[in-house]
Length: 425
Image 1 (spheres, rainbow, N blue to C red):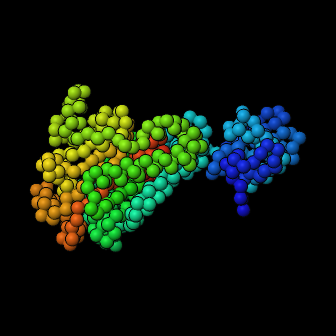
Image 2: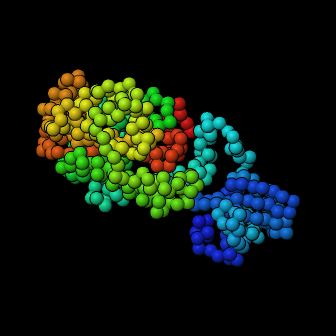
């Protein structure tokens, strides 16, 4: 079994030491009397030089891109090498000789998506997925540290959580079922048992939106907290995002370097964030020439404008455009105790609110909106049996990382993304 990774060799080994590297051939450049290889593993890359006088020469001539190899030799410092060290090969064992690798420069996005299982081997794409994994770890650490219980809900639901056409219907043993849009209905009941709960799980939205920030399957961080108000849930939002940024900065310098993320930029995105009410935001947009009226929801251009100078919370939207479960501000009737957190370029990344705790008010809103919860009526048990003030939020993890890394398209953040025109591989 391999016990030493390239990054460990780079950190711990000294020039002149004999080391062994197991990995894949990432690059190959041949000259008359020497061959340069770049070997990669899951941690980093290393430049290898093979001379024509070495026992490794014949194997180096034969080896192809993405062949798996075991190389042993002497480590030497070379600042021209990609990671500052070069391995002078003495032995090269080809574990498996790869066929001609189909990925090269200047290929179309569609082709690269068709061979996504191979494109993941690119060091930039791999670095993004590792940053994603670290983000998830930061979420788990933050909420467990703050005494939240991780509690999941099913992905199959008897009815869409919020109705509408944006649900995927599936067959379920002769019955209709729907893929979950949100964990919230379950969470608002679970707080009576656990008080503070969170989940990190897939959600599904059948939105016919082909943009750089929409997915049909995305990973949703959802949080619900008993006895919490709007300010409490905003503080939790800032806290978990701050934990993510700190984690990436402290543990993923190399991945950030590979992706091309400036640490100053990442630090600039740390909370606390500015806050503006919906009504003030509308006035600001009107001053800048946007045709939007009070009572209309924001679109992508509005969100990008509001967040162009940095992340911003927009709070207290009109109740007329909010869901039936949003709380109403007693100091400003007609407006909700809610927020959207907008990030530069990406727009809405987090949606949260203080929920409406009163059963009768929710029933009135459902009746006014002509919504029949049907098989999801059990949700209202959260108000029938010991209702308490509570608040929660949903965070799109891919959108957050897209914003933090300044990536052009959200597809790069998932190993195998699903969006309107993509269902394979």
